[in-house]
Length: 277
Image 1 (spheres, rainbow, N blue to C red):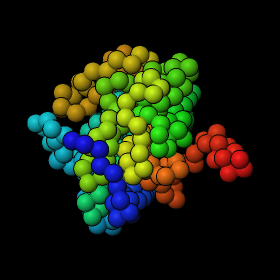
Image 2: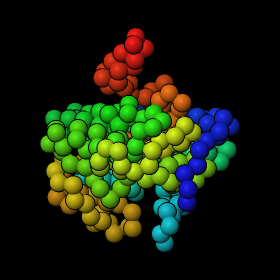
Image 3: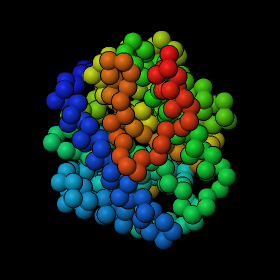
């Protein structure tokens, strides 16, 4: 599969799908609280996508080239689950950290994004891991422009995470996205500057670092469901995700909405510096 470069029509379609995905997370946010089950969140998401957004939940029955269809409309990864956690009937409890990963298909285009949620107060470690993972994602995003390499993005994310005492999962990465859920290129969250594909205008892909509080090693979850992945050392894991468009001069984040968390201050500082240059 080769990289697809979106024309104006494709970019419009991706903007709509990306906004809808982010608005789905806005809708779910007030429901993420003590006592709710991830199955209840999944049902809310399915109804909102299909009835309100008149769209399709991409994860539902997705196989990803494997043999086991994903059985739900969203992924909910709790505490030491790294990714692809399947919603279930276990109530969330105070202190849980949860990643909700959503992908909406609208008019054939995919919008893919995820956010971290801390249920109740949360531990200092859980809050710090979530915050620094969010910053790591944005350190990668702010580099995006034509002419840089994907290895530049991976390098800056890895350096930031490891400098703060955390580790980067190697086995899962960001990906190209468009009319196909997972396209080329692969977007690693570690690597060396100047390596891998060079970015060109019209590329759309996700940046979605999975960062562990402990060691980077992962394993299949105890559920043996063919999807859930956990940290091998049972340490906490966090992930944030945005879908990005490479523009002629830089980047556009396609998965933004009214309820999106604001970029970290260093991103705004860079934008202002460029505007005043």
